[in-house]
Length: 124
Image (cartoon, rainbow, N blue to C red; front, side, top):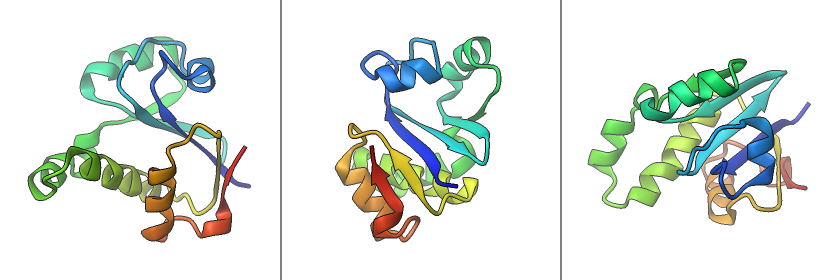
């Protein structure tokens, strides 16, 4: 079964606000993998996540090597995209469906880094 990926913030994304009814204004990765729900959120947002969606497992960027990525990547966007690649690998994602609002550049990065094959990332 394909995993679900959403990359957005809960203020502008109705799909994500449905999954996590909390105000999180910075974009983050939400995933459903084999019936398990994850969100890659900062330590500041972890408390809101636990309060409003206690069944969603929080993964903090530091657990995925965020500090090293920021040191190595001169561009914040590049580091953020690589963080998503690492998160997907950690969760074992090999195919996924995503809403049409999923960032194209991020989808291309997941394909380029061979997290998912081209036809295994579908936009619905």
